[in-house]
Image (cartoon, helix red, strand yellow):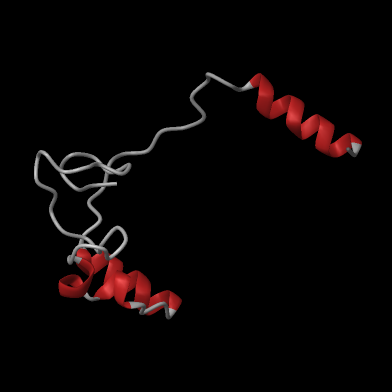
Length: 81
């Protein structure tokens, strides 16, 4: 391990349990996802085809409002990230 890597590791290890930063919540709408897909030219169906992505077995699915009893994979209960 290089000295630089050792230093970086020690720095990160010393920060365990400390909050690095915090930002405000913002809504991740399907429109925002579509615009991001346009900018990145990543138009895979999983991002932009709501109907197909909503079907069982479609990985995580594209954006759709979450029901209160649905599984929450990192987003807030309201469907915001």
